[in-house]
Image (tube, rainbow, N blue to C red):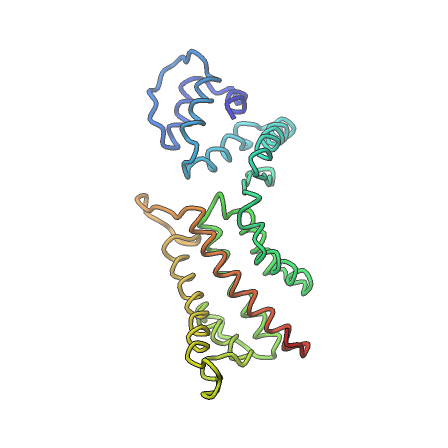
Length: 266
């Protein structure tokens, strides 16, 4: 990363200003003894900071590397280094997205959901999984927002495929409740004589609560709302918790719907 920062040809004061914009508090001087060594030390200080992914994204932006070929070469160089640490880079030509291969993208829940989405040609589900794959490690806010939208997409699809309609202004929790009704899994649908009826009903109620809490998280920390400068975001581990909960709920709903549609009980 030190070489990439050096390759931008920023002068000493601009290089110091760049890193200070991400939380460092280095004294601004006009001439550094070694710009490369300063950059190496600055990246080391940013290590572990939630500012690091955006700093990497900006240093590799077309602003600093207007030549597409040179920018691509720098991205590929970083990709080779990050692979050794278990990370992948996705590059759209303007932004780079860094994700841990052992993170949310590799969870069995999302992999199963992706398989269902591909089989059903459900682009709404697939697009949100792609965003979660890409953003859970580097932008938890976007991942949380997409997790909430994933719940909505799955519930709406189940309701529509069952020949029913849904309120387009319905909350995620209301959509889950309606999807459960479609699947004959609303708490009130469970017969009193069923074994463990109270536990079953409590579990079903908690599914709608997952959607409600996801909506709350999205409003407080996720994407889609303006935040004051004092606002502090969540960390990747929080995004993984949110994504895992939303993914488990969606997978349960989809697999139940498919089992009922095919007449299987597995």
